[in-house]
Image (tube, rainbow, N blue to C red; front, side, top):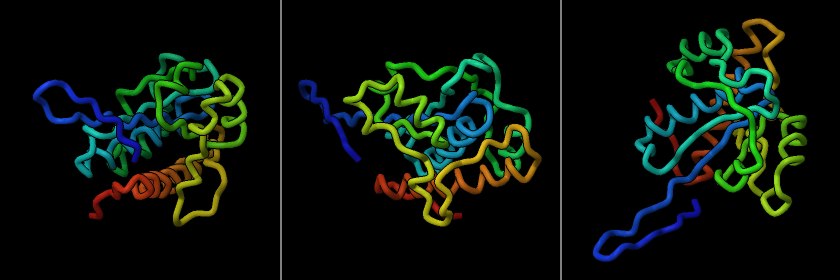
Length: 175
């Protein structure tokens, strides 16, 4: 993990928090799920002071709304609370404010790159690049499907978030 240290007179160096932004289309199903999963893994691993998580959507369809009730219900069954999140739209300044911008699929990646300064393209990756147990290239949108779709999203997101933390040298605690 890249760490930026700041030193003030007579104090210990402070480590800058790594900021991770999860992105899907409307910010009501996949990205809030990924946000909630990673946030809990970070907290459970005692890393909340080192990693900050947020989420956004490439479109403004649901700005200000809570995550889809089905996403919240399925996440809650696995111990994740999405209830305090509110949808917002991805902004150009997010690409400099966040260290990593993790998208759910190719359409999200294309939409993100359209507003991302070319100098910041290295920040944009697919969340599934961090999967260790699944070979999917995309986290499918469960919005128009049934319960299985929301469970599949959670399976992929849990795998990818654990892989992401391992890549950062901060593996989540098992248990």
